[in-house]
Image (cartoon, rainbow, N blue to C red; front, side, top):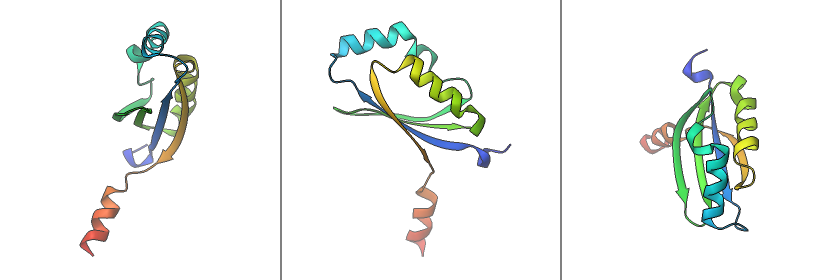
Length: 101
């Protein structure tokens, strides 16, 4: 399977605002979230902080690794974040082509 066969996935982790930062960090340390991220089969493309929101993370993975990603989030991030996952793709090359035309 080539690189073109991999999915680009956007993961949005929204902070649980019923908890303070110390509580969130303690929970993530307890579950090993940071130590073990990204889960097996996932390649980290980007990870940014959206202030007062949480994390926006892009991962590249083969379709067979999607279940592993879901289980990882359920086991290690629930309780600190609410999450959303979206299949996505890199639009930059397309936008560049439109600009050149």
